[in-house]
Length: 241
Image (cartoon, rainbow, N blue to C red; front, side, top):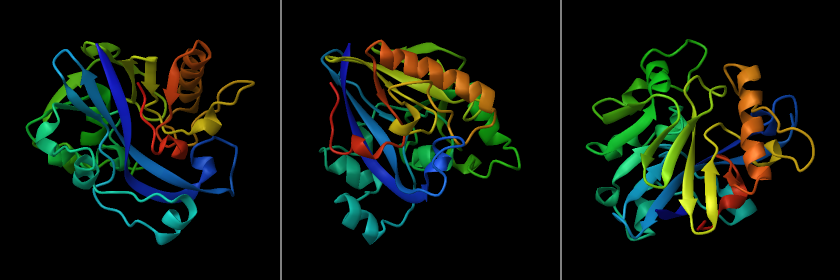
């Protein structure tokens, strides 16, 4: 099965680049986009799937639009731009359960939501140091826990990549242009230099694990797999596959 992938801009923050790249880029302010990835199947069952759901509430700074020409939209507005509503979405896949990746999950009540079991436990019983988990984002949802690497649908599989969070997962999608991997861990293209190792995400619960897992993603890129970092601004306006 083959899909197209359309990034939907459903939130924005202004942050330090060091949040993305461990021990690098501190002091450089960047616009941090929150993407929901719209997967639309070509043929087959014609599935329509969302990977991550972005922020439920945010301010769209006028400076962001001035700097980039972009405007972040609320989820229903972003879907409407593609002629869709929440009712048209067949399933949700969460890379992890920080607020900027699952904030709109409650909109998809009744839809199956796929998340690593370990991540689900972290959200239900968050560590005091990780303030980005909010159990209400997953309450009363049709949660389908996933244990490790798995195929969720024909042409869509997940890979456990613990490090940024204990239960983060990358999503591999088959397209007409070849496989595409949505990273799962929070990073941008600065994490994937052309020479040398990939750069560990700046936010992590275990830097060693996060470093090792991002090397695996860079190795896939070097083999010709397209990598879509979760917070890369240049994804705007593009369709993959």
